[in-house]
Image (tube, rainbow, N blue to C red):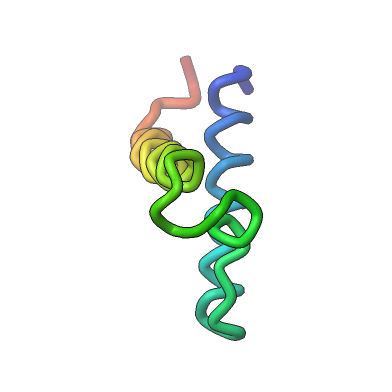
Length: 66
């Protein structure tokens, strides 16, 4: 597995844990750590998690027998 795949999966796990916390406890860990939902760092992290989700979606259709 390449570094970019590992990075994308790691960011996706972070995003999943964050969404789990939001759903169960109404607590946004990313916003809490980085100064709120509107802070530039939080928005960058949310964007990276979204891009990671798109990347991992692409992995579903990859031919692993190459």
